[in-house]
Image (cartoon, rainbow, N blue to C red; front, side, top):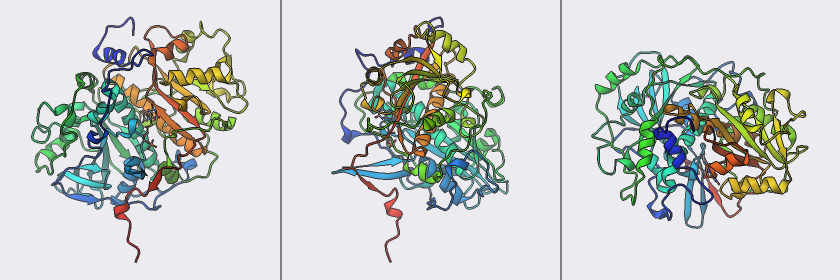
Length: 542
Ligand SMILES: Cc1cc2nc3c(=O)[nH]c(=O)nc-3n(C[C@H](O)[C@H](O)[C@H](O)COP(=O)(O)O)c2cc1C
């Protein structure tokens, strides 16, 4: 990056770094009563309640990577499960007068900028056309219902971001968090689809085309105004759902033509009636990162390194259960350590292989893990590297001068290529991990924490968004693998960028850590009460 011209996204990334001396520009104080609306609705649009799965569809987590003998039939029920196990409310939490929803997908600050959309045709009991997914009620709002067709069933889910939800709290760094959240949501959809025996594949199309398909460019619904930065949504990604007889989606032009012939229904509710400030750099970053390529102009599916297949997870837990119980740990028990076999398994699961969930990512894998090993049985505390892609030689060359005594971890499965860069005392690793992750204890009291390191020279334009989304997807793998191992993870978006690079001796801008994560034994907060996700849908006792 130092040798490359300063493009808008490189400038954005540099400008939104946290430094020991100062955090990236943000609002300072927050009035939580003025939080932007966490749910958007389209009053006036026909509402179709989605069934709740209630255990109807499930598979062992260990089986998810293997296609089932008979995948679930796509219809209203199974579509409900796809959305329920990915983006729906998982529980309500309360403490005193405060009450907040948690969802199956995590989100930076629990602010949930991601909105989801369903495009469908020929699906039993689901009207053809475009629907907005309304997570608060677990329902579809029919935005543009096209004439019923007799075509074979097809299904796609699209994601957009209400960036103001994140910007309101995090200021200029929020664009990064939105992209990480999109990556988590993509991962959440990939795992939920696998429960049904389906797969998820991104379809590249220009952001402008996707925005038009979702109606996000409709001036009558999203008028250009000085509040556009709070109300507008950014079209992010379209995911095709495949399997069980689902056919390819019609060409975007065909769909646009159909949508143009029908009356659009409903009007978007307001996100923030009185924003107190704005961060124009976020709009600039969003504009600079828009996709301009189509599936035809992009190279074919990303290439993956040749790793041996991931063995089935040794646990017997149900996938739906793990997905529903996934939470972010807020505290860890520093007395607990992680069995070595669980650690190897988690590292193996994040190696990019075609299939679940990495075939849902848009670009070739680009991230390596810088590990802060704290409490893993039989492993010395220290700094470690998990190389994940073929350009690992280059990251090793960059790390070599600082870690001349690095050594292969011979106890680890050899295909992991795990390297111990430096053995350090536990207190020193704790000090580093805590300080570098914005002084957060969760980075130091866990079994291990990590930074996701990317080669940044090609991370521009849409490549910048897709890199951050890969990081979010990786985070989603770690969240679920942690639950499957009986421990817990937490994504860490707050870290001091350049001090992380300096701790690993990485000079210049070529290698950048883009997301952190931590895994350990959680300590639950007994003061919080937990309620069901959709209490309004529970049957009254007869
Ligand atoms: C991109 C991202 C960044 C996050 N950063 C932090 C962080 O720096 N510190 C932290 O304690 N939690 C962090 N979290 C965890 C969120 O606060 C958490 O997902 C949210 O409160 C919802 O709770 P849940 O994950 O239990 O559903 C992050 C989550 C995501 C997805």
